[in-house]
Image (cartoon, rainbow, N blue to C red; front, side, top):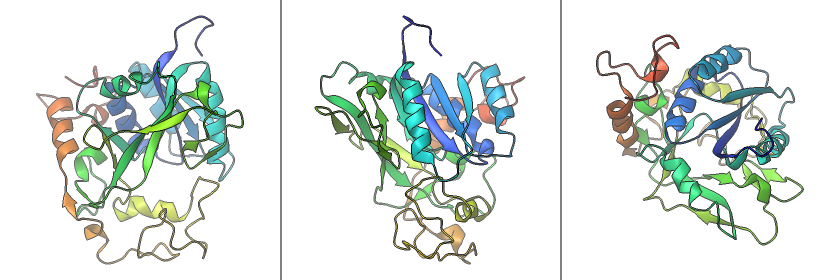
Length: 291
């Protein structure tokens, strides 16, 4: 918590997760390089050592707080709670998932992007489009992380994710799947795809992806095992209500090979001597997030 009178962080991030500790280091380290300064991690009953990962990240000077949120399918309430906390600490806070990575290949570029609107008299939300990536031919989780492993995606962009000014949200804090109602008189701006895009590693290898059948955190998203809303964009096209791997799963959702973020990550973050990325190394050996 920032002390009274202390300057706010310019850019913070909030997410809710369940048993995704394995990807948290990559997500935090990468976006810290882009300029995120403060992290609110809402833990929805994980049992995979999430606190240990948060402790390791804090030992590397990442400002991470884990908040236990035990209520099932209550993501929106958790985000309202997070918005209240962020109001006193952050000028901007992003609500996005740990399988979503902003692609702006310059250090602190994400913070600079939202800072352009901090003094705007009307802008309270900045939206960025997502590209959904598929398994990219893989059958096992990529050892170097999702940004390097998944390189084939659907051609057309899909949903967008947002950064908001927490002090300019509607008093109700109403939000539906990552999007908040703004105070009267304020509006949204959309970032051009040529400026920034989100790589959404939505359709990963089956052993990772199948967890979506057993838990959806949003209040407004039907659990996939329920025989409801089969046409929802939240679901994977062509799948039913049972976690049965299609024979061609590794080849699905592959229309465009896109190695832009992979190439950038390897060029910017890989250790010159070992080739290891920061999230592959332990806290004792990871002295910096990028060379």
